[in-house]
Length: 500
Image (cartoon, rainbow, N blue to C red):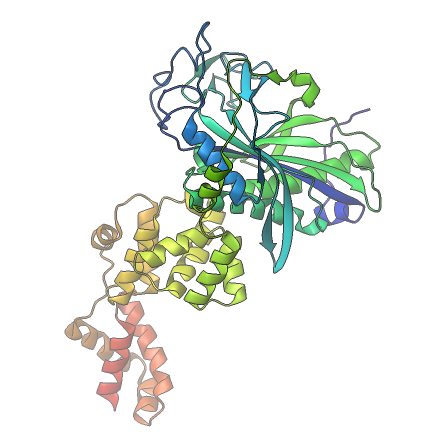
């Protein structure tokens, strides 16, 4: 019997009875100039169906040829994931009804992937968890369906559907983990950290831009529950195409609560795919999940096996970037961050943003302050990951530069961030259009100081008596008078000059 959960079991309560077991599948589009098996360009955002040919359209008689650069990228990815590289592998046809794959099968790899038996370590709350990689295999991406009409953007309720085959055939690497069992309360964060680290690794390798918001990196979250103390795995569901770090974490939490509700009610979990809904963090049913046998894999007869020369593999090993964990330790030392500072930076998905902001001229602590403070708050309010905010590290560094030059203060900087995020232009333009520059003219400041002294003679007398701490009240009055646009340091100097 299968029933639908109408109410989730609270997360902590679910973990008191069940152990979550996860498996993650990451699809990474490679940034090669051409597609996996043909010479069509891969540029993102082109007009629909303008980057196609007989091969990627699956027309009769068209023969594929393997993209050598994609094979190189796949090997470098496998090495970075501590995988073994197969001395010989081949492609297979994965037969399935793909409405947006014109061949009606996907050229992929099945039992002979190019990379296998790897691992990466992820850090969560000061603990390191090893995630075992089962395989990383080459395949081609599908096209894109656009469902027109209806309210959900999905096929149900749509008036008609449009197909764009530009993406069909783009080189894709699928990274598949083995089962992941970590302390239940850490499962959502570990899933997020793993996907985040895969993205960092792909960007560092230079094989993909790994833009989750554009679909060039997508995560499938497999989850099941088993009773605490049991060795019997539960039935899994697969939440497909989750497209942000935050959403990966939310999908794991939601599915734990949903599975627990069904199991507590005496029902059974249906093995199926699920759709994740960004708007409210829920999932909904997709289709019954197929097993490998259902795809009727067989070797691709039109492609020769791939047999990378071991010497070439070792040559590629020498091109690998610094491992993420070692890089974090080095950056932490260079920046003078505490363990907590670094943990918070990595946990917020802000490491590369801070790196780029520092490279653009900001001090490390200032870069961290803005990305983990003002900008993290904005991202949370908008339900976005930090990299998706419409502001660049260079712009953040420019705003900090305005502070360092004493042209604005921290309070005014928040208004500059607000303007840049709202699309009002570059930081300099926002300062000019909103009239935010700090007033440093001694004449205007002196007049405001005189009014402050007249308004609070008691504070003024305390300063005359040598109690300089009383200047805070007068500084506050001047800042209010100047709408926060006064140089607080210069105001203090003028107050003490007048009253000393």
